[in-house]
Image (cartoon, rainbow, N blue to C red; front, side, top):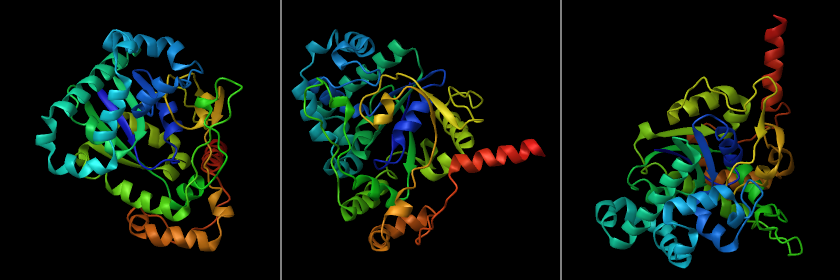
Amino acid sequence: MTVLYIAGEGRSGSTVLSMILGSYDGIVSIGEFRNVWQALRTNELCGCSAPVSLCKFWTAVGARAYGGWETIDIDAMINADDKFARHRSIPRHIVLRRLLRDTSDLGAYREALGRLYDAIQEISGSRIIVDSTKRASYAYVLRDVPGIDLRVVHLVRDSRGVAFSNAKAQIIRPELEHPASAEPVYMSAQPLWRTAIDWEVKNLLFYPLVRPSKRRRVKYEDLVAHPSEELSAIVEFAGADRDEHGSWDAATCSFESLPHHTLGGNPVRFRRGRVRLEPDDEWKFKMSRGQKALVSTITFPLLLAYGYPILARRNQTSGCTHHMRTLARRHKA
């Protein structure tokens, strides 16, 4: 099977991209799947809005993979994830790949993951699985799971936009909102300088992961400015039909927010109906010059490499607005 792994730093549009791709024939989106063990422990809400324990899809996956989730030692799986899928383990994965592949603990963990992805493929009937976990550390584990053809979409967003988004407080995690009487759980906020360092380091970690033919870099800004072209290129890279459009509608620059069986991710996955793809460029207007300068100074090597301007300019025209104006001009012509 093909696992299309959306890699990169958080707050870069991975949830929306995975939702759009999950509407294509032969493709299933499972969200940030590294969270599966924590999701089982806390019984978080699936993207279909049902608790994982009551979701028919994940119940069927657990039964197919292991004969039921109750047969799995969740604590042992979380410990294995902590041991092998943290960023501190990446040097070992790069330098000692052959040796680590043969260790009994890592082999058992990969075997358990392989059974899960096999079950997801069988229950969904899809050949391509979109995993939007993003973290490089988990991808290094996943690349050597037997039977998986790992292809990486390296999703990059301007570091200043990521830093501004990560600094926001009081953003609720809706997957942990049940029961209704419980106190809300918020996403953790992070200072600008910390996100800037993370952005620089984490993006660099993906380059040794897979050979260039198995990796495609996609800029968030290109995705929202030219969505149809970028989506076609991504599905072709994944091995799907380039001419298939799923729920994406180029005329309205929108997609249908379906009840995907996703774990983790942006709260948008709980919305229903058509969602218009709009760029999130609030940071251009609300960050001070000093804040922009701080993040730009820390991240300027990759900003330059990815073609971002060091001095960010305000742009009043959104990607979809520009796209629809272009379509209107063509129609008039």
